[in-house]
Image (cartoon, rainbow, N blue to C red; front, side, top):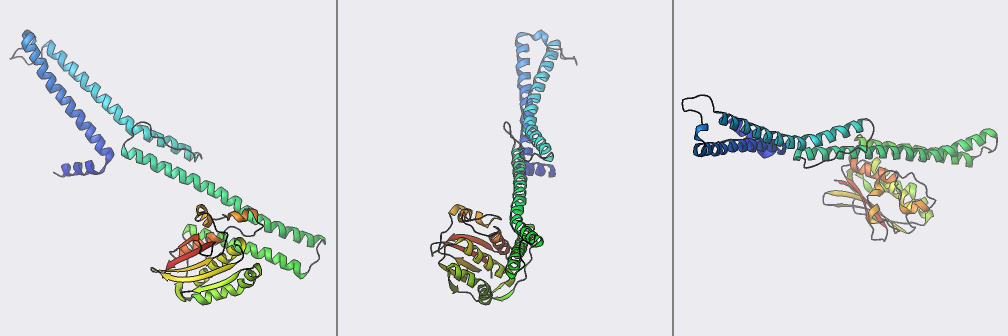
Amino acid sequence: MKTSIDLFTIWRSKGLARQIISSVAILALTIMLMVLLGSYAFYSTLWIFYPDSLSAPDSWLPSPAEWGWIIVSTLIGLVIAIWVAVRLSRRILTPLNSVATSLRRVAQGDLAARAAARGQALDEASQLISDFNAMAERLERVQQERIFWNAAIAHELRTPLTILRGRLQGLSDGVFQPDPALFSSLLDQVEGLGRLIEDLRIVGLAESGHLHIQLQDTDLHQEIATVLKACEPSLQDKGFQLVLDIGLAHTVCDPVRIRQVLLALLENALQHATPGMLRIGTARRDGMDSLTVEDSGPGLPASDAQRIFDAFQRGPRAVHAHQKGSGLGLAVVRAIASAHQGTADCRQSELGGTCFRVCWPN
């Protein structure tokens, strides 16, 4: 009884096992019917037309004609069994061999290798091929991203290091005279390197799942005021008019990280937005607290709305404008939002530009 239940369970749940069981059962039934019906036809023919070819009733040995029938029916049964086995094994082994070959190519460093399903592969074999190809595609994408990251990091580090080396070499050779302006310029480059390294650290920790935050009851209005105290002069000099829309004063978050978020969003607006109204808002809705920064333009195409949060991605204006920035600011924003179990998104603003919003559970 237990065996019957196990077979029924396999039949219902496993496509490959179901195919094998059904193929063997159909094969056995076909051969049995062939032997049974063939025997009736064979003996009926001998009884009617060649009664002398039948073995004697008291003989244990088949007659030559009966021996011939036994041999022919056995050969036909073997041919049918071999044909079914070859077709079934081909549907099972061909995709497995394709996966094995592709695995060897991947192990040798060819991440572009993909398995192909030739013929009508069974369900599990098709799923195996699909899973392997998805894995290989992800590995290839990870490799491409690693190459891109290495090139991007090298590019971002090259500029400040070149400036620092040139200025220090000039000081050493006596080309530049030491003065406060020169030292201030060198300090700016060092601070830029420090911010870049910190941004890389945050994004790396977030991707590895090790970006830890310290949640506490936070006066969000006070944190915004602290950030604006540092950024407001630069924003006003650029022509931005700050507008506060504080609908939420207190929340539970990591205040240090939220200040980093707001600072990154304001720096992004300073580099890429058109001077005009810049609105900073907070709100609580549907169990989520949010911080938004909206600018007056020029906005982003819908196709760039999510890509813009990827590391080293810049808006279309940054390609043509002489704008600074590592391209990590919004990646840091998304990393901190994820660490808060929240989200970061970008949509069209009512002011005519872009609205960056960070949400986290209250």
